[in-house]
Image (tube, rainbow, N blue to C red; front, side):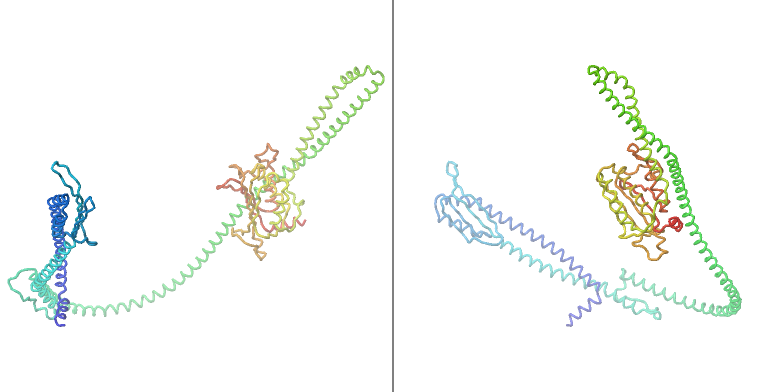
Length: 615
């Protein structure tokens, strides 16, 4: 245990020497391995070249004698020669096979290991120079001995190099310890024992005084540092004495300052109390101003919201009044021209009836005269017919012209009467509509069902989405006319009476602030603030650009050549704005073709509308 403990102590106290020893061992081992590998490679190449040389000797000297012995059919001579070749180093097996089936062997054929197998053809050349094949020689050489010799050499080289490296490292470590490590330990011990009260003891190493190297520089630097520290300590003591004197002067000044500060503090406390009172007053004033500012901001926001609502209401009222005035004007004109149109239609009908009676009378009179003439003079019947036709031809032309003119007048007056009836619908008369309670969703289904006869050619797909129940107290007739106008408009203008169209009616509930509701509120105050938003979509050809603003004006239509009057959307606008007290607008679609109408209707009509309905 003593040597092992000594080694441990050496490693603990001399880590630098241990690292030096480790580095020397690693470098020496690496160099030894590289040198050993190089030597082995050179020896391996030498062994292979020796084998190649022996093969060359066999090929040049033994092949010809073996061919002659085999040609002369001398088995004993062939076997002797094979046994002689077997004595060569690393040759393990030889075999000769003749063309006549004879075989000669020497040695045992190895089954494993590193082997080199060569084949040589045996030929005999006669005196005329002609060659004859007599057999084949197989030669097997084993490399196991080569590898064994190389292995022994590796172990020898590594052992000698390892011992040499270890000894050199120990010598170097010993020299390093004597020259450097022990002096470094002495300097470390001096530094650990160095204290402020022992700065007068200098560092001295046990070595030849004449040596002037790096260690001498380190010792000199440590001693210089020691002297500098000693000088600094002396200066520090002087500074402490000066500081003590200054502290005494400061204490005297502090006592004077404390007295002044006490006096000044009393004055500041008085001022502070005054400032605190003033601050409380300012804080109270600031709080009042903030409250007043918040009230003004809330009032300003309310005024802004009211102003926006007033402007929107003003625009709506102006538009409603304009449309109502225009509707009343159109209805008044229709009422005024309804009487003359009726009288003209009656007169034209009477003229047609009288012309038809006169034509019948003329036909009967001509038949009676012809019968009388035939009974009196049968031979003069032909002459009588000719004379009668010449006399009645102007009357027949006049009757035909009267009939055609009366039919034309009746058809145009009937068309004018249809237009007059449409004009009368422009003036929305509330007294002709009865107000009652109904379910909007079910009523829309009934509207679609009632329009099926008019939609039998186009058959659009109509989808109604909304709450399961939506009871209203309103005018169902107005809803019927609004949605029948919208659906018929989609069929005529959007789908062009072609099948494959799709119509979507989406009914939702929302507040005035735009919040969507899933069901009707329970309180009456919340119920009055609910709006019905109805979005009507179709996938038709859409509305031309620039028509969205003038779509609800009278006589605006793109199918005037198909007898469309252009009053349907105007009537719809008047019904929504006047009877149902709502809004309707046409919105453009960016993503796809089609039309989009949005109706915003109050779920409960105003009290003024209710009184007018009761009246």
